[in-house]
Length: 200
Length: 359
Image (cartoon, rainbow over all chains, first blue to last red; front, top):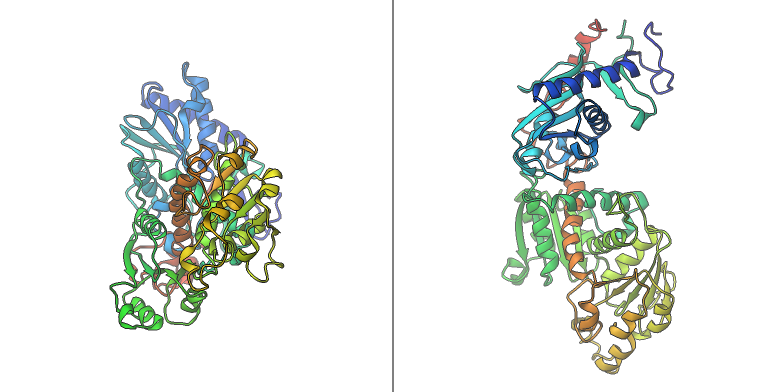
């Protein structure tokens, strides 16, 4: 029923799905973002990379590994952590109870550091607002920057990404899914049409 | 989860979910800023018909750390002492907009009545009812045991684990203990083997079908090398009615069932000692045992806050449970425009189906 690239997955069969980024595309985007982060911050001093669960955490680890590969003196494990934002969300009462993810911060803390938040899809911006609140309770970073693998638009808050893997203009009826080898067995970015027969 | 009335309501997955949530809550309690905004605007009432210090303070701390408003209500000094019934008290609290009621009552089953009589929409948490159940105490005990005995490097809290293969001895006044009842159910659900140790007079009639072994001899059970030993408080305030004839003398009880330095030394190196508090030092537990490094009694109190935060979070944060009390103002826009207040989902879905000009 679709002319898009078929996804070899039974769950995706019911809705039309298009693969917009493959494994190599994701890898290239992360490498570019790593260079942009180092360029923007004139090196890797005081960098902390925090992934937002679920998909942001493996992305943050991949990004930290690239940062360490590019910049001498950086150690990936000392850069990377995770930041759970569940308890800071503004939509808790609109959904079934969410499970709480882990928050881990590198040993040096975040005070005076440059924190790069990493998320898979930037959409309404509400997750990032919650993340900023969560950061506030953890310490006082010198600066906060945002890296997103996909920016799909439809912002509901004045929030903008500093580093974007790919801008994907979408409709709100569509669904953007980032699959990562660490959590899903394969790495790709997929657009699914939310309502039947939407995708071209 | 709509209410938390008994540990028998929790299956294995639900119990592990509470413990895992508690682990994340505990992690936030090590920070400089311990307060989370999660339950802002919700009201938690502590309705205590029986004396309590640590449970009430623990629930109050947990609710405040999640930014809920807390109203403390104790029977002394309230209209209950003028003869007000549980029903009228519940109706009053409902009229004041309580989202959760934490109740401790001297009558077994009072929380169940409160939850199911239709007097209130609030989520009900049993904080101890008579000689029946005390589920949050059992959860914090299980959390403490899991952390110490299944946690390892990389997973210090044992997140995701159950208690399979562990042996827990529950020693003392099982008859009067709601803590023991809740623990037997929960520890069994989580896969642990439980042995109750008490003099025959302090075991309930009908203990046979409980999912636990029973022994009258503490030394025999300690010789089996239990992974955790939970000492129960001798509840002398509940023994006065029967003339106190449950054991001949406190000294004899201490000799036969008290945990002292000698018995402590017979335990395996990894074993831990728990006590729900308040302790009768010198009766069921000696000062040596209570203050030894393997006693995790103070840590149980800290874990109690995390576990109660988890319970309040799971009961109050989502939508399904609290539909009747969720703010219906529409002031908070939903994440997706499709489900925002008032509008039907069809209006947002319809005009966008052809807009897929991507890639």
